[in-house]
Length: 217
Image (cartoon, rainbow, N blue to C red; front, side):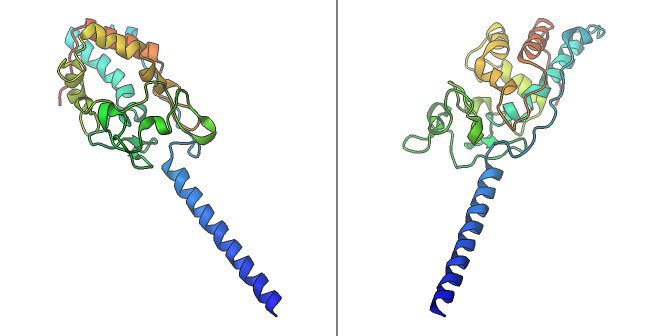
């Protein structure tokens, strides 16, 4: 009887442990920006030539920025431009797990969990962890979440809030920066930003050349 009782108790304990592990794994997978959720098909970007029919220069600039806004307002960009101190993750833009905060230089709080603890130079697809040598949060002055595309447009042109970039430097940043470029190569399980960085850069340059008008609102 004792043998049977001990065996039953061991089996129950084993089942409980398995259940707890499954629950923990399920929670981690939901929280992580990993390959458990199949990425949605990325939207395309219209080429600059598609806006040539718009004769009014400012209206053309606004239309091109709205097209580029498909990238700017995608989760791949928005997750790293939070309004608060905590980044978001996944296409649903859920609060980052584990808990991290902006800290100094957008790299995490001193003495706490910094970005480079988990995010290394490249994506680590087996664990679903994104990576880039420059991985960090955008400065709080460049917070985009909760703002309209028009507000973001005004913000990114403001040298006091964009790191002192003039229009040429802003275009170069959008078109060539490799951390921006990560949005099109986000690793397994994440939907890339719409189009390509080359197409996005061309839209931003054409927008600037047309006067850099911003959407209203």
